[in-house]
Amino acid sequence: MAYLDNANSTRVDDRVIEAMLPYLREHYGTAGMELGHSRDVTAMRGLENARKILAQSINTEPLTIVFTSGQTESNNLAIRGAALANSDKGKHVITCATEVMSVLQTCKALEKEGFDVDVLDVDQYGLVDIAQLTKRIRSDTILVSIQHANGEIGTVQPIEEIAKITSQRGILFHTDATQSYLKIPIDTKTTPLDMITFDAHHIHGPKGIGALYIRKGTRLQRIMEGGDEERRLRPGVPDIPAAVGFGKAVEVWGGNEPAQLLALRKYLEQKLAGQLTELRSTGHPVKRLPNLYSMIVEQIEGESMLVQLDMEGFAVSTGSACSSKTLQGSHVLKAIGLPPEISHGSVRVSLSRFNTKQEIDAFVQALVPTVERLREFSPLRRGEYFAYESNSEDEHQDEKLDEV
Amino acid sequence: MNRGSSEEFHTYTDKVIEQFRKPQNMGRIENPDGVGTVGNPVCGDMLRLFIKVKNGIIEDIKVETFGCVAAIATSSMTTQMAMGKTIEEAKTITRKMVADALDGLPPHKMHCSNLAAEALQKAIEDYERRAKGDKPANAQEP
Ligand code: FES
Image (cartoon, rainbow over all chains, first blue to last red; front, side):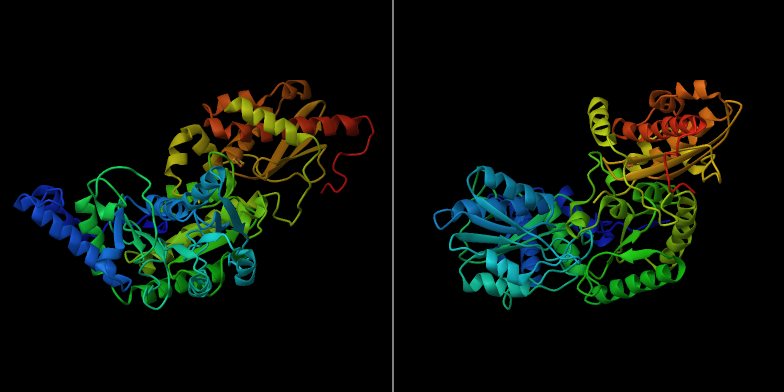
């Protein structure tokens, strides 16, 4: 038994839960700006203390941190907020193909509203090409949004280089650092980033709370109307218990955790390489998240592996088309150039502080026979790829439609 | 990325899971009398079904499947439904019958049941073509 899906979400640390409880039971004030009573004051202290902890973690001042409901909202606020506030300077936005949906869909929505969006391709490792990025910059480019690390394949983008390019040209740079936060240090004093998205539930904090770092002086427009909370950028009473938990999660994060995660991942990689053939990893071999291993197990399909592993108590993920309701495979695996019959074999293992070597051993012990069993009856076993027979395409499309 | 299978898992019936865990008639037949190959362009899955026919009766049937839990379960179920049947009886097997025999499939998985049923029909066509003395459908057949 093991939970190996930490890039999806993590277990909340007990210390975080303990820190949150008083803010649910006793300090349930709203931390309003007009200080009324002591419950409000204590609540506000908790909120501001959390803000301070977050600010320290990326070497900035508390004023630059705005609490949101999570990654999705932070990405929406950063991209839409910056685009709207700076549209007098231009309407061109650059992003890349492997971003999360809250980035890609926000950009798509902006396109409908008259903005021009360029979506950069990535190479086989998932990296954006700096030369291509530079070439796409126009005189009316106002914003570049490129993630720090990808949650499906783990590839880490060269955000320092990008920041240098954008800052020299007066273009805003937003990075979604949800997956990398604390695992790969970010220093806002040495890297000229304008906006950074991060959230709590990837670092053993609660769900429903995230933050957006906004460099001082960045023009941003709020995207939701209401009161003056959170620097007038994010109206509504913030989720104070969750923010306190977020702060605690950052506070208890150990400095040696990235190294431990990396050691555990390396252990997993070695075990897999020793026990499975026709296995390849996806993502960049070196520039990648310490806790994430994404692989293709050839000849078999990910959902069937997942279900088998789930029955044996192991939680992992796949980017296989079969496991999504729309039958669309992962857009990330597609962007790195994998055809469906290859990306079908995708399995992602993502680790946390709660995982052990014993769990890795047990996982590999469960995975190997699963793979062998499914390969046993795979038509691809002998390397015979066969072409689709003619005319079946339209039939399938039609049938799929009537079933839905 | 599609995560934890539990949601999917719970939408599968017990029969589907049972067939997935212990699928029947998986593999290939050497020197088959008919072969049906289907690729699913919707999501990239592939399936190849082999039959051995004697006196108009399917006396052996095997299938190789590259696909999800539903594709494996429907493959297994289809072969069990066709085994021992006459060619004429086997022609009447539809994907709906296969899905029903599994107590149903999640709506977005219905297309998988089509793979096996279609491969069976193609294998039968191939058998009939060969019986007439034409070339086998799969020239590179094993
Ligand atoms: S085989 Fe792809 S969804 Fe069933």
